[in-house]
Length: 70
Image (cartoon, rainbow, N blue to C red; front, side, top):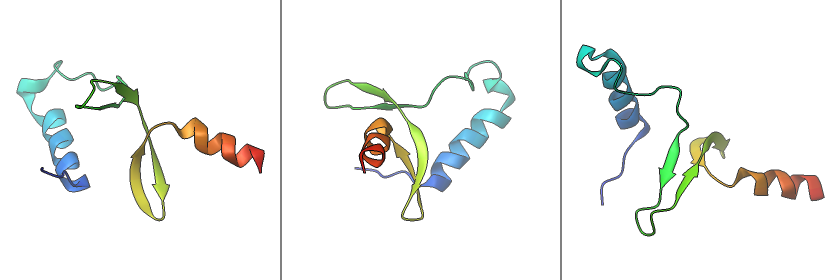
């Protein structure tokens, strides 16, 4: 399995944004989606810092619900 680094992701997005052949082909306003290749499920995600690590996260309502119950 290949792992993508934040630098890999940055380079990909930078290339998408700066290649004139890509103009109009990438919807920059669409939500970031995490796709589960095992079952085809897709989830909207957000970015958060956990233990000083930038993380793409899903189901964040669970975290906020737990904080509210304390």
